[in-house]
Image (tube, rainbow, N blue to C red):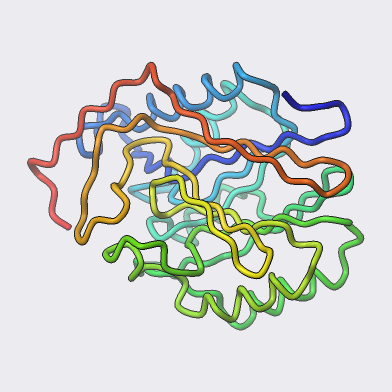
Length: 261
């Protein structure tokens, strides 16, 4: 359980929401699965902040982002940071004025970076975005930092997903691991829970709020593992504790009959 000196951050990712309330994605009601995740997570504890790490929309119409904001507001109304993923589009995302700025939480800062390119599956950190990150790290007075993006910066052992990692991930990792205050890089995209280390930096991916991909597979594979979330417990002394939870009461029934990848 969290202690009074720590900060609890809830990460959710890969919502894949649709503008039509009747629509389903691979047979899953992604709005209902999102609600099950929020309900399950926030029943465990209160969140001091929420980080949504991309693929908010599956169909990136402006009304999809408005729907995302409304669905989350039913369960949570505190500080939040939002990132675009490969299924999101800048115009609709920015029109909804979703907050992407640095978030200070006591001794900690959460900094978001944009790894998506409109219309592309894979990730990249543009030169200007990398410079923005370096400037934020240089100027923040936070003692400890979490950086959040959508795509992972390195291979995770799932060949068809690894092709979509950040193409200049080594450059990003050089910046992150070069600052001892950066304790972790958190992301989504891969619809699964993974944890790895790079020169003392934790790299954490988080389950989707809808359906999950099967790790280690050579081609697109989805299973009925329940949707999930990640808690990040940020202690005053810089210790980061983290745990993934699952909405085990939400039954996932995947329908691939009309799917083309």
